Image (cartoon, rainbow, N blue to C red; front, side):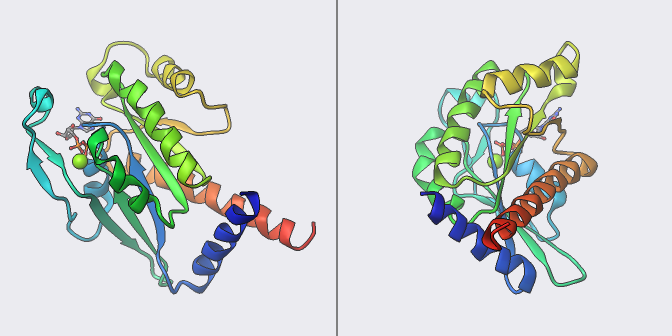
Amino acid sequence: MTAGRRASIAYHHHDFESRARPVKVVVAGPFAAGKTTFIATISEVAVLATERKVTDHLSAIKSTTTVAMDFGRISFANGASIHIFGTPGQRRFEDIWSAVADGMVGLVLLVHAGDDRSATEARAILETFRHYADVPFCVGVTHLDRVEGGSELLLEEVRVGLGIGPGVPVLACDPRHRADVKALLLRIFVAVQERLQRVEGEAKGG
Ligand SMILES: Nc1nc2c(ncn2[C@@H]2O[C@H](COP(=O)(O)OP(=O)(O)O)[C@@H](O)[C@H]2O)c(=O)[nH]1
Ligand SMILES: [Mg+2]
């Protein structure tokens, strides 16, 4: 298992260096956490989301949901690019998740601060994606502007609720704000770079 994961990371390192292929990041999280908004805020191309009317009890929260996936792209002057894929939050789309996760180098998990079910759901989603690939991830806590209480405390609650250690960034994120989205993506890239350097060091026998 470990060897397989290393091989996969080394493969992506090649992509990173050659600039030939985009780096893939996945945005996961429960229903209404802000995934589609996150990608729309940062992407330079129109978000290819397939929205469909919500017909079940969740329609009180939102009238449409993402059926297939969201896709966004960011490119840089040196030719590098990031492809961002969002996942449908509802559990009945779980079979799409593994396809979306294929080849990802980093994961952003969004959690809705004002929705208790969101935290429980987010933990299950995180476990599922961590099982697909052991890539660096960070957590964005959304909808903080709509909840009472100090955001530092809420961020800590989310960390405990997800069962993650102090090494994983948990940041406040309003997906409608570009600076917040950039801050989370930057954390992912720092973590991915650190991971690559470590893997490279190990490969050299260091
Ligand atoms: N007030 C507020 N609204 C947000 C925030 N994040 C997302 N939203 C809104 O919540 C709704 C659901 O977001 P969406 O991106 O569709 O969620 P998705 O189901 O995860 O794709 C949209 O109307 C967003 O504009 C936030 O931090 N604060
Ligand atoms: Mg969506």
